[in-house]
Image (tube, rainbow, N blue to C red; front, top):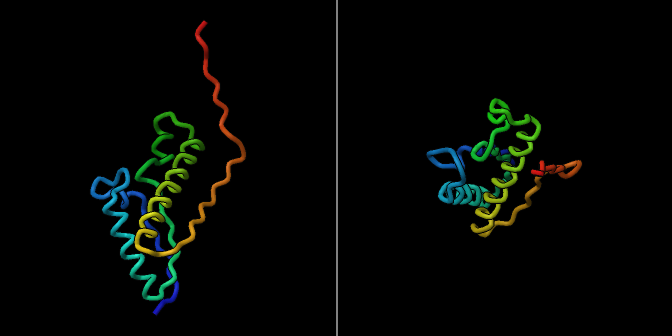
Length: 115
């Protein structure tokens, strides 16, 4: 029997049948199964995707800057991890969430003015 596992969840799976957005039912189902495994003594590392919210590569094909699109995808991953963490906590489990995003600067916003 394994003592530690790494669970990879796709962002699309959080969206339920449509694969978009975040389904509270899917969060609750995942949290219940993860909590049961943890209570049985399993140590679980979780990696979660963000494709249910945004995919940088798809945006690049529509004129989005690829790097900015990838940043949006990373933020989607953080949103999903926060949602899953809240659902797991609702199962009376403790956890540590460790998003590893580091931005080197804030975006500059420059708007053209009409004379």
